[in-house]
Picture 1 (cartoon, helix red, strand yellow):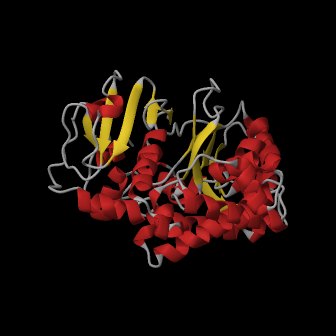
Picture 2 (spheres, one colour):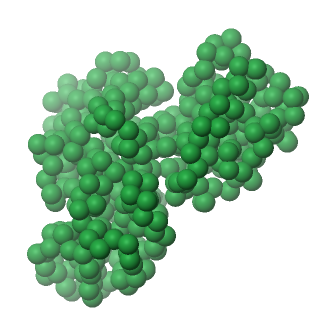
Length: 389
C-alpha cells in the first residue's frame, strides 16, 4: 500500500486545477458512492484528481487505478479495509471495469465501511451499466461527454464564458464580448476541440488509438466477445463513417460483415455506449433510448475528420455537432417534418442560405444556420448550441 499512497500523492500534486469540466459542479460529491462513466479520452481521470486536490485532505484520500499491478495479488476489498484502518476516508478507483468482480466488491465495501466515500470511473459505459445492478441502490451514476464549444474556448483559448440554457439561446441571449468573430474558432473546435488531449502532440494518432482500443479491446473484453468480433466492430464503424448520417439497413450491413442480422442492433448499441457513434431514434419507444433507430451518426465531429475525412460532408458535420451538444442536457429525437425534435421544439439544421419553408407552418420551430455570427427571430447560429454545458 505504501507504493500506492506514494503514486497517489504524486499524481494529485501534479494535477492542474485551472480548468474544470462542466460536470464537476453537477456531481454531488457528498454521496457515499459515485460512479463516473464516459468514453475514453474525455477527462474522467483528471476530473477526479482535481476534486481530490481542490476539496479533500490528501492524507485521508487514496487514488488508485484498477490496472495497477498491485491488484494482481491483492483484492480491492482488502485494500479498502487496510486504508480505512489507516484513517482513510476517500477512496478513488479509476478504470474500475478492468477489475474482475468490481461491482460485487464495491457493494461489499459500501456495506462494510459506512464512513468510507468511494468514487469510481470507467471508460466502457456498457459494462458499467451491465455490472451496476448490484449497485443500483448504492452508487449514484454520472455520465460525462467530451468538451462543449464553450469548454473548448476556455481550455484552448482562455475565454471564460458561462453556460446558457436552451431557452436563453433561442432568445438570442448569448454575449461574447471577448470574441468578435467566433466562426474560425468554431471550425477549429469541429476538427480537434472535443477531446482535451488535443492540446498535446499527435492528436490524430492518439484519437486513432482511442478508437482502436475501444473497439478491439474494451468492448470485446467486457461484453464477452472474442477478438474476431472486435474486428467486425471496427469494420462496422468504418462502414458507418463512410456513410453517415444514414438510415440503417441492418440486413445489408450484416451481409457485408458476414454476421447475423440479429446481432447488428447489439453491435451498434455497444459502439454507441462506448462513445463512437450516436443513434437518433424516433418517439415510438415512449421511454428514452427505446425508440426505433432512424439515423446513425458518428458520435462527434472530431471523429468525422479523423475517420471519414474524405466523407466530411458539411451537412453531416452540422447535424452531428447539433445532436452531440443537445443530448448532454436534453432528450433529442428525430422530427417527422425536420431534422430534430427536442420536447415541443422543432429544429432544421443547414447552411447560411437555409430557408424556413420546411417548417414555416410548424409552431415552436427554428432554423439553425451554420456560417452566421448572429441570429434573429427563429434563426439561430449553429455555434451557439455549443454553450449548453
